[in-house]
Image (cartoon, rainbow, N blue to C red):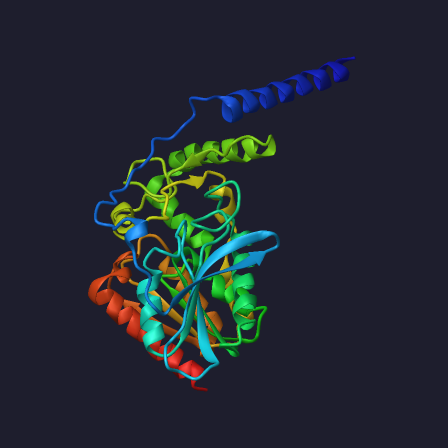
Length: 350
C-alpha cells in the first residue's frame, strides 16, 4: 500500500510539472523578449536596387520547397566555367554582403551561386526564420546538385565558400562528396563545444538558462502546431538574444539588407549545440582555406587550430589581426577576398 501511495504521489508530481510546463512555458502570453531593431536608413529600398548584369534570378528545390538563388556568370568566357557556391552565416540572407564577394569572383572568371536557406529571405518554408543545421546542409547539397546540372558550369570544378556559422559546412559536405575541388571557411564556426564555452564564460550560466526557457517554449509550441516563439538574432551585451558578443550588434547592423530580419525561432539554441564540422575534417581530401580573425570573440581560436592539425596537408591558413565582423568591409575585406581569389585560381587551374 505504501509503494502504491509513493507511485501515485510521483505520478501526481510528474503531472503537475507537465501542466506547469504547458501553462507557464508554452501558453503563458507574457513570456516574450523585446525586439532589437536595426537601422536601415543607409540601405536603398529593395525595389530601387538594380541587379548587376552578370546576375540571374534562379530557383531550385529541396523536396517541395523552392529556394531562391542568384547565379552570377562571367562575360565573354568560354563555357563551362568553375563555380563557387556561397553559404551565409547565422540568420543571413543572400542579399547581405555576399554579392560583394561574388562580383569579385566573377571578375576573376568564376561563376557564383548564392542562395537563401529555406525559411529565410525569399526562399519558401514555414515557419519563417527557422534555423536548422540539418536543413541548411540539405539546402547546400541541393545547390551543388543544381550547379552541376547547368551546362555553363564545369561539374568537375565546384568549390564551397562559407562564412561564420556556415564556415564549416564545406567540411561536412566535402567529407562525403569527394568531387568538391576546394573549400573556403571565413571566420568559421568549427566546434560548437569550444564556441559554447567561449559564450558561457562571457555570459554566465544564468543567461543560458533564461535562453533555454525560451527555446523550450518555441519547441513546445511547435509540437502543438502553434505559432513560433521568436527572439532576436543579435543584440547589445546584456540583452536576451542569440548573439550578444561585444561588437556583434554593430557588426550585423553594418550588413543589414532588405531581406534580413533580426529574429529567429528560439529553438535554434537547441539546434546549434552539437554542430561540430571539426569531426568531419579527417575525411576531407581537398584543399581548405581557413581564414581566422585573431581578435574573434564569437568563434573559438582553438577550433580552427585543431581543425588545421587534422586536415594536415590539405589545410592553408590565413590570419588577420581583426574581429569577427571586421573581415566584411574596407581593407580587411580586400585582403580576405584577394586571398580567396588566389586560392580558388590555384585550385581550379589544377
